[in-house]
Image 1 (tube, rainbow, N blue to C red):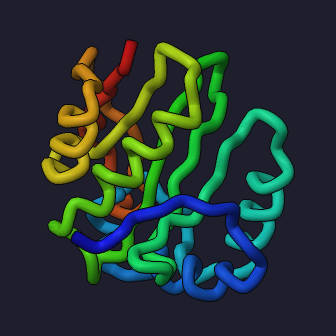
Image 2: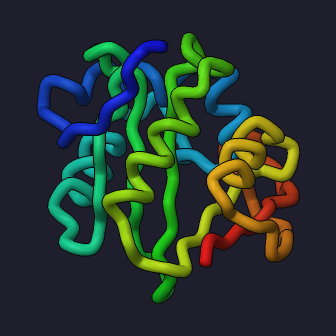
Length: 157
């Protein structure tokens, strides 16, 4: 089995992460993305802010040493949430689940929250396998789809 690992994000990772976060199918599936995934300036500003935040854990996800995504925890409105982005080229290989398990070992805050577009069944399955339970849904504007869609809210106690 290929090795999934987490490491700090390096400046040299930013070009690849930007490209991954612009993949049209990935953007559609994630739904709750930047207003314009092709805006490199906005991406760089966001990554700079996230990398400097004291209440954020941001890691690169690697597969056999190759960068394949990112995963993080952050505080929003008093709740600690997690999010991840995995390169579509490795979807279905268990990378997200293994990366999430590694992050959960590092981030000991509970409860943890996560959100996913309700039709993003793969991401919801990854979260449920990690022990998250669905606690509700809400309708929210998804920039990637330019529409209001249902979002599933999950929690890990």
